[in-house]
Image 1 (cartoon, rainbow, N blue to C red):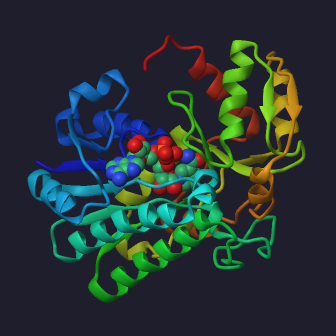
Image 2: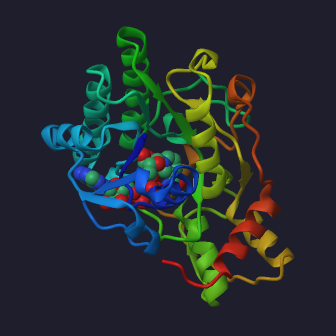
Length: 316
Ligand SMILES: NC(=O)c1ccc[n+]([C@@H]2O[C@H](COP(=O)([O-])OP(=O)(O)OC[C@H]3O[C@@H](n4cnc5c(N)ncnc54)[C@H](O)[C@@H]3O)[C@@H](O)[C@H]2O)c1
């Protein structure tokens, strides 16, 4: 029986991936690793191991204990937080990935997933339908670490045959957990503010368009990529992934169209500069043709899905 290891399992994405892997393989096959506990009732159904992913020996011991068929290495310091502590962000965004790649190279993990981001693109990349390989000159340490990580993934694949797979996620919007210090966090906060009847203090300009996706869609893309035939994968850096794109003003307007009012006070800060350096939308034709990716939600669909999620009874 195969085991599935998530490191960074207590984060926004980790909790969603935990639920999906528990459903697909059974909770007893899923092992959760993080420096902090996983704040969701269903986490108790799986084994939790407190671990520091920057510690090479701790990661090796964890992998030897779990013997995972697949390892999902999600640990990172996100874009806005990273700008406050660039060298710390570089260490946290690179070391856990390199430990995972080394363990895979030694044959101790057959398949690794590591997330990249739209932050790999810099201000000189085409803004609309940004191509897979244009303008990878980011201006944030988060983006620099993601470009470097992508190249390490490709290097380990080409040189050692490591099966590591990656997606460039857009801004991910879920309803289960609080955002973790990214530039697209405002959108998650907008939903919580709207449902709780609070005004939103938005740190982006009202017209700043960014690519976005539901957590549900991002997890589906992840599992589809991991299940794909490796020989069909032409991209071994990281695949562009497009869901839908909207600005804060368009999000507010769509919320209103779905019967939810939200007052917004705009006070752009340094996160606006980060957002301005990123694409409006991505060309994800490689993901579509190589492993059949199709986004489930346009903007109204995303807004409806998150509102429906928030209206469920609290589950963690
Ligand atoms: N959330 C997004 O919108 C988004 C967009 C693009 C890419 N991504 C990528 O997806 C991944 C997950 O993002 P997220 O939003 O869930 O982030 P998050 O900040 O919510 O979660 C990261 C998790 O890593 C854990 N962690 C931190 N340091 C650790 C260490 N030394 N050892 C073990 N665990 C440690 C944290 O406790 C946290 O639970 C990251 O690689 C991120 O770059 C996220």
